[in-house]
Length: 519
Image 1 (spheres, rainbow, N blue to C red):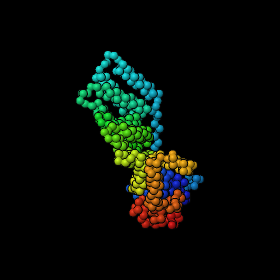
Image 2 (image 1 turned 120 degrees about the horizontal axis):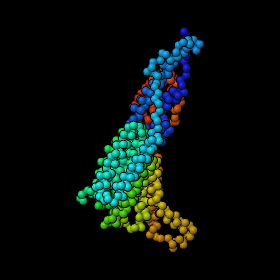
Image 3 (image 1 turned 90 degrees about the vertical axis):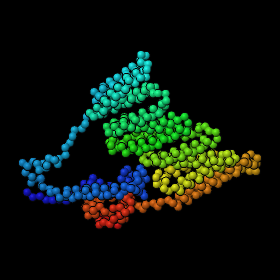
Image 4 (image 1 turned 135 degrees about the horizontal axis):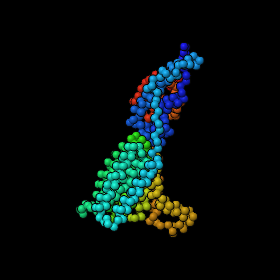
């Protein structure tokens, strides 16, 4: 029997995979954005710390594909007419080398599971009617005694169902268990001693129940519990704030809930590998709650009573500053652009309200026309010069939020200045009889401050702007497997990976390939 070894071209998928692994210009995370200065401009991925490790892993993967193709090239090809008819085609293949296929899992939403969920719902309705609409059960203690076992039964049934891979039934029964757990807590609150604040008790009960349930839900991959527990944990600081008799305590609780929601979003993003899917519903819910908490805190700050009229201004300034800090910490995917915009706008709002609080009683009120836009544009210039902050957030959105806030603050004096200019042009000397003299100097100062601030911002951004990367020479071109083996995956310095920092394996010397990697 004669065998001839033939060299075949690498499969298209293998060539594309190697080219993708060795593409040091496109973001490996999203596959679309271009990486500049170790950061993707599309998804916000930062490769400053893990770029070297990721590049080395990509090199090893591409090298493995190249070695696989080398082995495949050595596989002999036997002529079809030379194969005896009695020889089984796969007799020499070991049984462990053949991949075993498993049958697809049956869908969990069967007719039986739907009927079981409907039955559980009817039981839940009957329990609610019996506990809350029965005239013989007037005490809260009796209701709590009735509802607690039902809640425990539903929660235990959900665990059993999810372990039997009946996820549809487990999600529905688990949701009913959460509802009865909340009803049990609500029925138990009136039984507390008078010295215990109800809001503190509810907050402690929520924390004690939601945190272990979140850990259990992640382990069981029960989404209704994951969503409910994360949402409940975001409300715990707000519940504690309601226990404070002072308005400042409620504001502090609301802002802390915003920070908690931001931390829970970061945790939900990292739970993807453990849950097996992206927690989109949880991330969206927590993001909406974080934004709502921030808005409510700012609205509450406006109505804080105080002996001094400027107290609300300082309260709004402090609240806006906290919102800006939380927004900077939240400026990461998936809502990095939105929170960068909020950070810029909140920083300008904080500076403007602080300036109003400081100078409102020290200068004539007419000079507020100049004070507000001047403080806003000064903050904008400071944000534009804070280059370390730009690496932490999405800089275009940060400046966009600040510019929007400055435009809002500058709109009234700009409108007055335009009206005065139109009056002067159309009426000439007669415009002096209708112009308001006390407003003219502050408006002039405001216009001058805006012009100066925008000029300084333009000069600052040009002076400290980052140099753009050179063109993507050779990016995305196919890399033959022979080149991978001869190169041993050490690109020359001219092909330095943009998402690997200097001094990594990508900057080391290596043997350049003459086919595709020569400078």
